Amino acid sequence: MACLLCAFIFVAHNAFFRQIWFDEALTIMEFTVRPKTVADIYRLYCIPNNHIVFNMLQRLWLDLLQCVLPVITDFVFRILPAMFSLAAVFVFYFIVRLKCGMHSAFLVAFCLVLSLPFEIYSVAVRGYMLSFLIALLSFLFCYKMNKTGGKAFGLLYFLSAFFLAGTIPSNIIVLATFAIYFFPIKNIRKALGWEFIVTVLAPPLAFLFFYLPIYSSFLKQLQLKEGWSSGFQSATVVYGAFIVSFLPLILFAAPGFICLLRKKKTRALAILRMTIFLIPLPPLFIFHPAPFPRVFFPLWAIWAFLLAIPLNVSFALLQRRLGKRSAISAVVALAAVAFIWFQAERHWRGELSDIFIRGAGLDDYFEPYYAKNDFVPFYAASTIKKLKIPAFISFDADPYSILFYAKIMGIADTDRLLLFDNPRRKIERADLGEQFLIIVRDQRDLKRAMERFSVEIKEPICTASHQKIFMAAPALRFKKDNNKENEKKKNNAYY
Image (cartoon, rainbow, N blue to C red; front, top):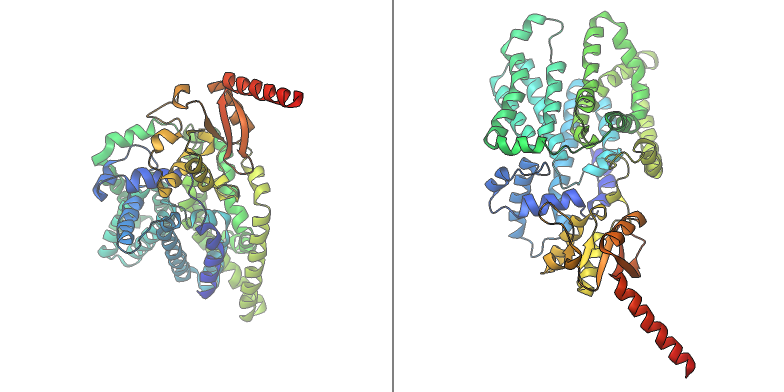
């Protein structure tokens, strides 16, 4: 347990002070702070960024902190997600140990904590780690219900499914795996028992109960058509990230899986449960556009648990051949290999991103732009505050992150100074004035802005960060200013 805590601190400490990015800023400003009451968060389901249950808990947490802290800064928003992450690690360890023993539980939890996706989402101000935690609790309650027949566990299972679906609607995919895992393949008659019926029906009923009061808003979200253009590319990222993250354990677990397939008693069950790894394929290839890869991160709670089963069998095979002490040596060796592998992942994360993403969309699992050191929207906001002139921010330059820090700094006139296209407003040339800033992501982005507003760049202010800042002015005025400066130079040269 102490090793897992140290691993968590090692991984999360850098990410904890990561600056707030687009989705997080939108979540905080629009769905956590803006609603007047916690109940209003539920009704404000205008875009999928509202992870309702998470935002409700975050709002309650912030209300509590405001009574204690004089100032709310950006990292304060990451405290609650970090707490969910740490709780998820220990709940995961407990569940896997319950089924597969201490060795497998530690190794799988250790690799999970060291994985790049866990580093990204462990402190993300979004509902992914809360989903991960509730998914584990749902699985535990469902397991207890099917094993003991306790109706109290059935109620807890329904409630956890209710809150899991309410955090992110796509979490219904995680709940769908329970029907496969707990299917009584050895005794088909048990499929008619109330335990399995509850296992199957509780998720869709919980989903309906949560979203039925806001069904009109929910249906509108389905029409937004957000996602990846290529289902195959998205699938490559989803499976590639999991394989890369757990590769040392997958290799060690391979003999255990082969053993499960060879035995008649375990073959059918092993094959059935392996189909859980195929769950993302239908939505990835049926829906267009395909879901974002991050949608499937909560599913890792079940996938990692499934990996522990053949891993445990491999330990049993090792102990038969080399004795009981060999298992401890293997755990130490695998943990060392996993840590070295993690360091290699961190070193080559940019290359991994290029291999798997290839420009198909936002990198959700390896090296997203907001996890890089050059992502500093705080600097962009402070520049606007210092110069006190309007700034046009392109969509690719992540305007909401700059808006977030502008509000944190107390910039009052953000409607006049921070200008960017959004559903409520499209920026016109007249909104910018005679002198203004242009904040873009790259040269292409800059060229589009210059052509759109017929402006020229007077001077670059910051070109080393993700959000590049330029001083701009209308093209005609810029030419006149140049002519005046040239005339002064000639006169000075004459005298």
